[in-house]
Structures are given as C-alpha cells and as structure tokens.
Image (cartoon, rainbow, N blue to C red; front, top):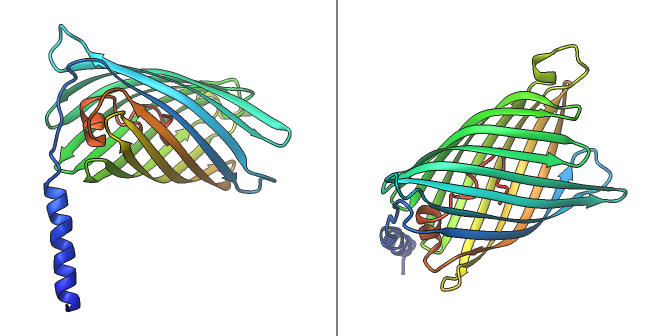
Length: 271
C-alpha cells in the first residue's frame, strides 16, 4: 500500500469521525451539575521549589422557567496550595446568567476569590460560545477589582479559546488569557505594584464512563507575568476527574448542561 493511499485512508476515517459527531446544543430543560477534584503543580520561576495544590469544586445550572432560553449557574471551589514552609487556601464563589440556543450561549458572570495572605479579587464580565459542528469557539472579558495585598487594585481581563471534539467523548481545548491588574485602584503613588499576565493553555478531557458521567482531564498552562519591570514565567500542570450528573457524551454535557469550565471567571479554568 502506497503512502498516498494510507494518507487518504486516514484522512477519510478522521473526516467520517468528525462529520459523525452531532452538533447538539440547546437551552437547559432541567438541572445539571458537575463536581471536580484535581491535583496540580505550579513551577514558578526563581522559586526554590514547586507549589502543589489540590482543588475540590462544583457547579449547578438550571433554566429560569418563566424566561425562555435563559439559564443560571452557581459555582464554588476550594483550593489548598502548599510547599515547604508555606500554605494558602483559595475560595471561589460565583454565579452566571446566560441565554442559550442551538447555535451557542452568551451570558454574564461575577466571581469572588479570596486567598490566604494574598487578598481578594472580584471579576465582573461577559462571555460567549459559538458552535461550528465539532468545534466550539469561546471568548470572555471584563473588569477586575481586588484588595488586601500588594497587587490589589482594578484591572481588566480578556480570553479566547477553541475546543475540538474529535469524538463525542473527547474534547481538546486550546486557550489564551490576558489580565491587567492596575496598582492601588488607579493610584500610582500608593506603594502597590501593577501586574500584567498572559497565559497560554491546553486541556484534554475524556469521558471514560458515559453512563455515570465520569471524565478525566489533564491540562498545562504557561503564564508569563510582569510586575515592576520584572517578568516571571510559571508552568502550571493539573490532572483531575469530573463527575457530570446524568448520562450523555462530553459534548452533550458542555453544550446542554453546565458551562464549559473555562468560561466563568478569570484565567485558566477553576473547575
């Protein structure tokens, strides 16, 4: 068999797999939920050792029955980070309202985060996702307000992502996130330092128990942040398990249930 024949055969198989995936999407007809647990490491440049972390989070979504195509979602998570002579607790609590139809979703989101010894931050933003067959394009952006730490203040964030479903149970997402946190709520002489950060990430998620809604995922993100003229690079690795309530494929859960875990909040996925 020639190389050309092999290549054409492989292309046909991939093409058939892609066209066979239905572009399922609709407004929610009932309640949907997901629980996530994961372990990660943050390799921070110039740090003596890596920061390890364990996360437990979840969300619940449902329709606003009196308003067609309108839905809500509530999110919460706890993250414990630690290394030698250091530990920190991160709590997230947020909510979203979104409109959904067969072509995509658009909505608004607010999320509050507090970190031990590092202050707190609230984001207010908008997001959207659009479906192109087996691909989902996503975008988000908004405002930041924080305090209680040296990098507190106001700022903005933007993000874009693309997720591909090569089979209904497998999703691979590539994303980019940018955030700017201005010093001291706009005050340039308050002793606070502004931070700019840009992160590029990739995540693969596979639903290996469709009847039970259990998936496994692995992700990597490279975050380059600049503060006071100094640039630091972080490498963030994470592996975990998600449990989606009810049956269905991974694409069904992402498009007909809870929001894609990347959409709410700032930066890389918190859920």
